[in-house]
Amino acid sequence: MVRKLVERIQEDFDIEDNLDGAFLEIAEFGELQLLLADKDPIIMTLKRPEDLGIDEEITFPTLRGILRWDLGKRWCAVDRGAIPFLMNGADCMAAGIQVVDPIIERGDLVWVRDEEHGKPIAIGWALMDAETMDKSTKGKSIRTIHWIGDDLWSIDK
Image (cartoon, rainbow, N blue to C red; front, side, top):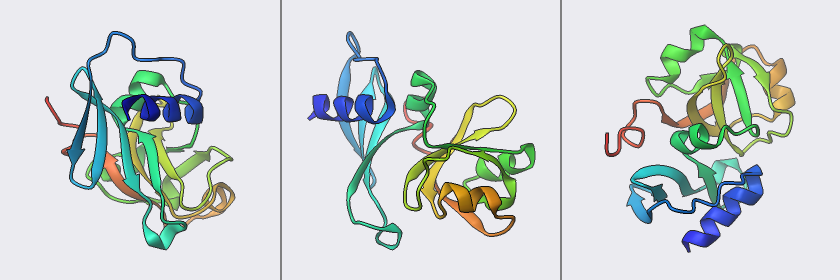
């Protein structure tokens, strides 16, 4: 099971880290199944919400996983004004999005980074595809599920 999670993430995000030498364990956290490496939650598995497409399980890095691997896929960058809201768990509004990875489709799990430094701030479900997100000036574009400072971020800290 652990090997499958690692292989899925490696393949989906072009990650070369095979986690050799790390103490790996599986844990339940609410509706999430987590893979912890040396007690840091780095991968989560969760169900896609019914209103966002096919009912399936999605495996995606947590914010700590994104920091570990410096991912270059499925992200959007927000301006400075959006950051305080996202760090309080707010959904990401289209007006704050400045740059979007063009591969994003509605229903994808995506990560949000700050435009200036490229650091991850939040993870959520894309409510729009990349082109719509890029052109929109109003409305919610991402339904936030995990952010810096939330309970998942604070595990073992």
